[in-house]
Length: 132
Image (cartoon, rainbow, N blue to C red; front, top):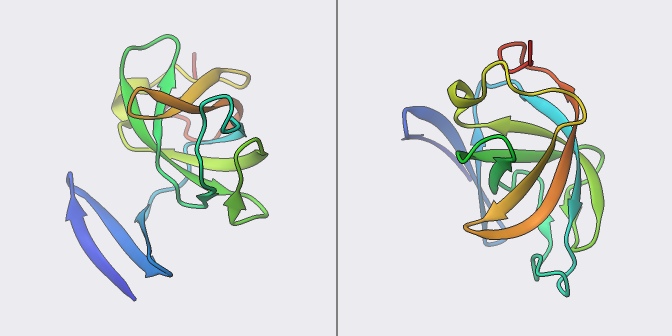
C-alpha cells in the first residue's frame, strides 16, 4: 500500500509493509554517500535491525544543528547492530549545511540524544553542500 502525504512542506511517499512504515523523500537526489557503522547493543546501539529508508538524526561535529537523514542502503535492505554498510544519505535541512560537507567528514546518527552509529562521508553528491 502506498500514499502521498505532505509533511513539513516536503512530499513524502509512505510505504506500509509487514507492520513497518517507511517515509521516503520523493523527487530528491541523495546528498552524499557514506560508510555507516552501527553500534552493537552492548555499545548502546539499536536492539533491532534497521531497514533501508531508516531516518535517524544526523549530527556533524561542526554544528549544534541535527537534521533527519534518510539512509538508503546500497546492495542490501537490512543492517543489524554492529554491521557496517554503505548508504546514500538524503538530509532534510540542506540549507543549514551549504558549503560545509566534504569527503572524509565524520558524523553521528542518532535517535534523540542516543547515538546509534557513526558515519564517514565518502562522496558529496549535492554541489550546494560541497565545502569550498
